[in-house]
Image (cartoon, rainbow, N blue to C red):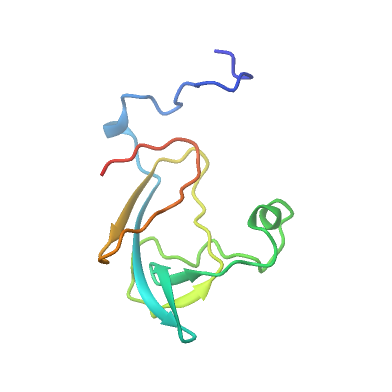
Length: 122
């Protein structure tokens, strides 16, 4: 394989081994509606996203403290009171993460996910 080319690469976990791969993390992400500071907001596991003054990529690259919190969102809903925060979900590099998006609302939610490789089952 020519790994310097921007083309398809072999999956390091094996394309046909999904039942045998150990999950490194499980996330159940549930969206909900809440009123925070008198304004309607959507939350993920009880946390509504606040845009920081510093872009997240720059804060991560330069290791700037107090811009975001990688532990603000719990892995599963825990019944916490809704709050606001600049949260990210940090997962192991090349980890096999099982994510369930749960929507109990009567409106459709869209999600943006960014990473190495995805298989969406709906």
